[in-house]
Amino acid sequence: MEVGEELKQPKWKRSVPKRISSSKSSSSLSCLINNLDDGCLMHIFSFLSPIPDRYNTALVCHRWLFLACHPRLWLRVEQSIKDPLEPGVFPSIETAVAAARPGDTILISAGGRHLASDIQIKKPLCLIGGGELPDETTLICSRGADSALEFLSTCKLANLTVKAELGSCLLHRSGRLTIDGCVLQCETNPLDFLSVPIVSTASAQTVLSSSVKCLKDGVSVSRTRIEGGAKAVSTSGYLTLQRVRVIYARTSLVFWFDMEQQ
Amino acid sequence: MSTSTDNNASITQESGPSAAVQDIQKKIVVRTADGEVFNLKEEVAMEIDIIKTFFQEDSISYETVMPLPNVEGWEMVKVIEYCTKHVELKHKVDGYKERKAFQALFVQNLSTKSLLALTNTANYLEVKYLLDFLCQAVSEQIKNKDVDYVRELFGVENDFNDEEYEQVKAEAPWAHENLNNDLH
Image 1 (cartoon, chains in turn yellow, cyan):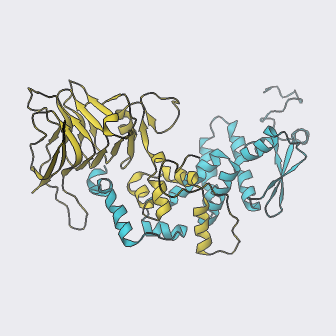
Image 2 (cartoon, rainbow over the protein chains, first blue to last red):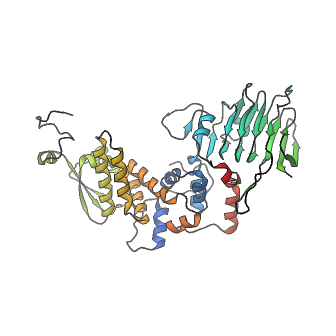
Image 3 (cartoon, each protein chain N blue to C red):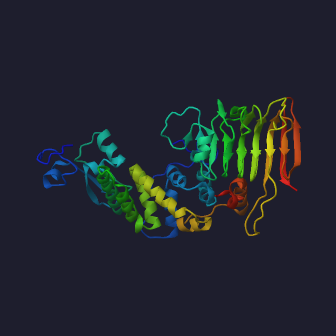
């Protein structure tokens, strides 16, 4: 079993079921669930929806954290599908997003170009590029579309390149968007003022009672290269740029900033 | 499969078990950890991959009693019950409701501890559909419960210290904040 090979955490071996004596005690019960091997426990977790159940199991103990967050439970987008019956593998980002449950993580395979045009994301998801560098996984937004991805929910993007031929890369409508270690590219000399890598139209903070945890709408960008576009960010709502840091590398600019309501 | 009821030589599922049929069907014998011995009908035994591999791929004679040192007697009873039902339903065209009713009954009186033991056994014996069903049954016990309840139910100790715990919680703010807005 290949579980745990790529990860540097302690390896869990496939365990042979131990025989427990018939005297009942809670410690023998704990032996029972932790006697199940990794594959078995992950299989159990795969039936749980990521939010809130799988997220809760990740908080139980170290081993469960490792298994509940394991890439084997992620959805994958692959350009060429070897086995059409394999569950959890999709030919396009749209189909993966449609099939995903709130809280799922989608791993987008490196190499090749993935089409992303006006894909609306209305549930909390995490999209991760499968390569070592963000440059290896590219999402292309073709000319006709306004943006590659439109976010109406709290989401996270990591290790991806989003390239918009015309129009914006990411359109943020509501929720908390986290962009970490990505590359956003727009047309270098755009005529259209909407050719901006990140556009946010998020407006006033939603009003919630104090007993409910809430996070204001916003965008959080870190270690991200932004190239092209009339400007890096455009906000037509109430969010403003804060805590901006830029590193001027030889050929590109790497940004850290937040967009929040003041 | 012959549909003619006059033809006694053919063995069909529809004709029902008769003494003559049961003699012709081969039996496989297994012994569990507690010394109990079970006679299984061949078609049921072949549902259990570990038994199938033992006899078919290794060409061991059916006379041999296969030892199952990791399985208890009561577990074997349950596994046989499930596999027998599965084989029976395989030949039925519309067995969905019956299967669901059977499944509900199957887990009805099982304690969490027994359910887990049985899951482990199904994994060891390699009966895929039983394992799928049992894993799903375990996940039903976890659904919509909070962390403390789950720890209590399965008797798992919390090995996070406060700092680590808060760190794990904080690592996915994108996932659990604003939930009430995001879950439609």
